[in-house]
Length: 135
Image (cartoon, rainbow, N blue to C red):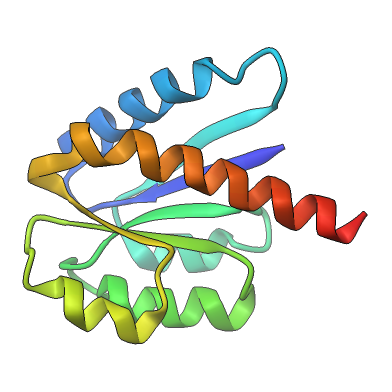
């Protein structure tokens, strides 16, 4: 199973992203068990649930209240360095700052429809290659 989480403080964007990811996952439905969700609107909830809800990939907003996406990425990486972090932001200027957190990808919210399919497919490939390396 490959599980994707979403953390974005904008519930309507998170719902739209969930829908798009679900559509992308459907093309793999016969060969892979891909789970989309849950969705979190507060990064603190991601941290408090990490022990109960394992995940492989997180789509992570950067500009959030309580804990920024950058701070959340640091904590996630400390707890599980194999998690793929895909930053999703409306602020293109965060792309260079994001390099310090070694993200798998950086997606621009305004270009999500164009950028998401490739990022999703590459995340699947990476998760599968990690699984095969462990076998």
